Length: 337
Image (cartoon, rainbow, N blue to C red; front, side, top):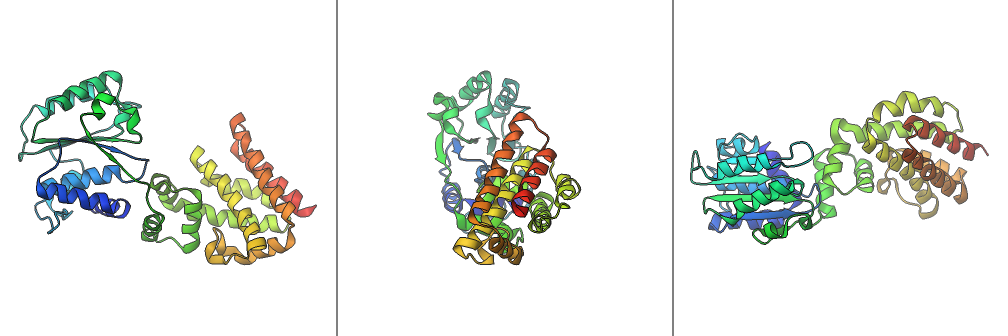
């Protein structure tokens, strides 16, 4: 877990990581920081790595923690007595949680001179919790450092913002995302597909869990094979091969996006002559090229429009299997007409 935080911080926010290692090494760490940025940009990882740097027994010459010592490992695993991470209890951080935090603030460090508190999703604090937190921050102790994490600092009380040092996290650069995906051992086309779906590392983690993206990609390529032939076996394929991979609304939305990307690839092969390595479904390039030659531009656009229009049935709470089956029938109709 420690190595995971170290890698994530360096990959997603190399400049901020370097800055905070210098700040820790020079002893200039402030008493409270407000980390603000989109989900998945590395806020928690940087808070954890900075905390490790404070406690690490064997930091390198730049102050970067080793990630191997007992201190680093306990911090990463939320087992260090002088490091407390607070997360929402249900949908919000409640006043009781902040009161418990205040009691910890008043105690001396158990094993050293420093105490650290990381407040994840701090924008979910109730009004009472936020006001209680304000009192904590208003009375800073030199031995205490707090990290408040949020997706949007505007959702934090102005009085809290004024008493913390705001750090705005930039969006992750495309090169860093590609590097992150390569570390997951994805193929070139899987990387293309993932980045066309999202640039959020939180969502990428969801896509990669249990190799879901690769599994759905292969099943959709099988579905496309039946569609390209105008074969009605594409219809039962939805239930037997696609639906077992669809578990929630997120996977539903991604599945629709992936189907659209298939026909976008067909369009790009037909009119832009894109190479297999540049496509989301380049592994079945011959199939895409065959469809590009078979279909007119009007037919391709019609398919994409039908997919998007049918997907709106989700708002009417129509079952997702039914939506995929309607999409399948419409695609078969275009192919055979």
